[in-house]
Image (cartoon, rainbow, N blue to C red; front, side, top):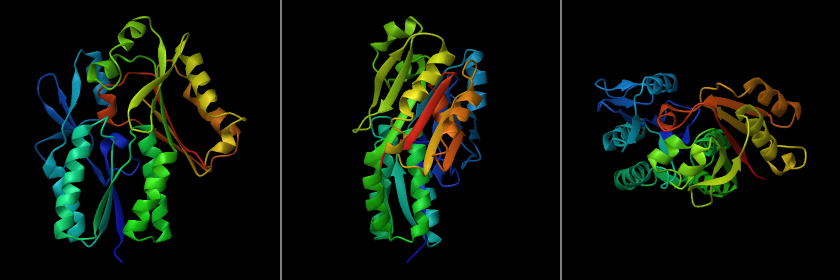
Length: 290
């Protein structure tokens, strides 16, 4: 049995970046960037911090369809080295191009490498992707076959809680990832909880009124508290963030650790792909229900 490697779309915001297929970002001058170390010497990498520095200067960024060649090159290189591949695709409702290109490439290469490459539609993104891909990599220790691993992930994906606290929806509205109807409430300076639903769509779940820091802590306590904490798998919790201006991150970490429940709290910035339509003072919380 070959060693298995898990690859991911960048929209899943995986911790393991070496097997992440790079996302493509384009600025308003038409310049292309990857969201990690470049696979193409002609295209530079860009970080979350660089994205936000550009936004402050008035730049606008958008994501573009991933390059088919990046999937082909990444998958083929691993297969030729003797690895089997389980690819985790971002939700088609978050990036239909990532989903379609990756699944088509999995299907195409499986003809040449039968039984050695499989794909999973995770139906999540952002924090949900971070927690799911982390669990998936942890499952590699169990020495499962490729099909057994895929079956476990397809069960696990239905238990993912991928949630985000957003201090302003303007970037998400512009990118079409949340309803345009939020434009009115966003003008009023309201904050939002946005989750991935069972279909993989980003759905506004709640509106918050008040100071960002207070509402962010309220959001965290709604998701994780003494009354519901044992509903979650204790192995991992993922906490993601954009640049924080008003949110007191240290107090949130202190609160989550005070339960002494989660064995691993994964702390990570959002990827540049997500940052291209995000805003400051955004959090992501990823959990797995039992």
